Length: 630
Image (cartoon, rainbow, N blue to C red; front, side, top):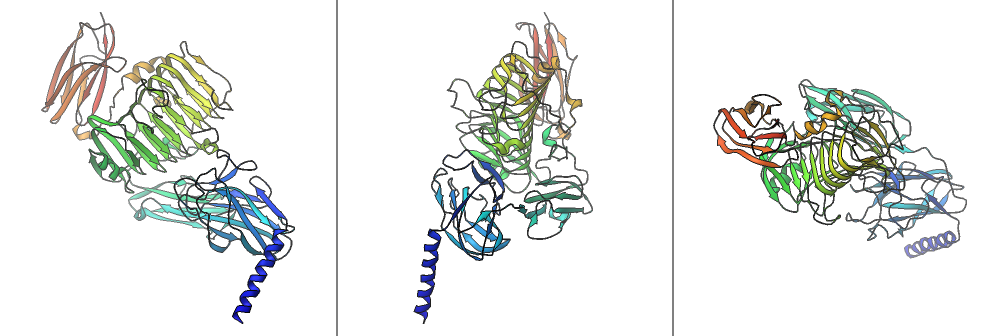
């Protein structure tokens, strides 16, 4: 009897398979009737797809793609997918849901060897009820799903149908478990697009609610919104009295175009630790816990150091230099990098910001050299894969071919979310990309460009507000090139000198943060920016050094006194640099006891012009301007 039953089952499958072989096949491409939604984007940058592109999910467990079909009668139908799965993450299997019910825990989507190797998945025989059926696949692992070219459905009379996308609330979390409570309503497995969701955050004593961050953003502790995508949201609670650094302005301080604030404090909620090796840096910066990492020394290598959320990396002492070593800020939020020198990194970037938000790079020096070929080094800063809300301030960026890239290619439409501020940076001896920006928006103000071939390249519908910058000995200050579609610019009170600059296409960018108090006059930018060639960040207010000149800005002819006070024993390095940042004389390089000091600088042998003293202690760095008259 058992053998007869097995024969009947096999015979039935054979009959069904023969029938299906001659049945109608419906292919549903993305952007066609029957395609519902992808937790990601429709892409075109991998060759070999059919139709107008392919569906590419974001990273993450549960990321999904959905379709909706109509079948005329109850019965067995066959579905399968044309897909590609390359990279190094292996198979990207999924769960299959029909009309919100799990019908297969695991569909196997094996690795295809290369992204351009598109194959058909195994056929699935599904018993579907007459009428509309929503088909949904959800990723098993953190890499998301593969690339999906189309869905194939075999069965007579099958059609694609109009569908309302449905979404999930993947997580409602909080940054500090003991700081408060969070909840949401209604609670259900799936939500049709437009369903109103209420988020509720309540702070415990000693803490305050700062904002919701993630898929949706708000500074309201009770926040109601219509769901339009899968939701992953976190409530930020902070100890009462927590404040951001008053020097931070720009896009890093917000998290949407409406100006919802985000308090970038880096690793302030964790311990302060010292690092002097690649191992130390890797241990602390890649940790899931918050840290303020003080680094001193000069490390040479080829490593890539990962930086995770809630970190501050600050250089201390006379030298804080990574040579050949990349900092990779990947899928992180709330990161501060200050006082660091990073140079000669190849083949990767000096700093790569990948899928990250609310990042501040401040008072850093980034460079390589222009003695090698154009492609020997990559970028000094790369900002890509939906990175947004970033400020780069008071940095020296110099001696490099292709410096700063925002969005990695002309198909990276997801980088339309990019929002970047560059202010008070000193760009010199660079060839191009200062920055090159695709798709997103940038506010570029009070920067000093000197001896550069090409500067700001606005591409692929980007909108760039270029405000009160000073261009000196620059070939092309603002232009649109190298992409099939140009970007646009808004030019406000810049000094272009002899540089070429484009005025169209034009755009208007209303920035969602206050910055007028930090906005300097265009003519003052070179002196102001170069006077801050090295950080003036005080690391420990109780052990700061006090600095004063006999007069300020101190015109002298030809001898001046540099007076300063040291409040605790410290190594002290006092040098004189010229307007290009080149050290021309060392006045002190010694370990000093607390006390008042006075040093003469005899400039008899130097030309009339602007010079700077640079005083470094173990706890702070300061520069002052000196005007030599003859």
